[in-house]
Image (cartoon, rainbow, N blue to C red; front, top):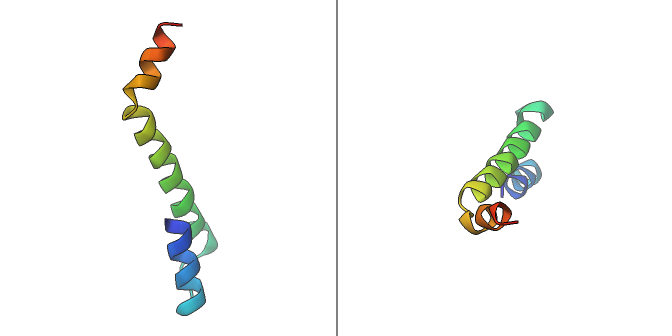
Length: 51
């Protein structure tokens, strides 16, 4: 989602953030999404415990 947002912003108005700031935002939002998926997926953790 953030990748599409920043790409649209770059093509329409330009980006005033440094590359480190917007790339870090994309990376950290991806990590946060993975962590939320792990926490919100109890079936995965239960299947792992019974193995």
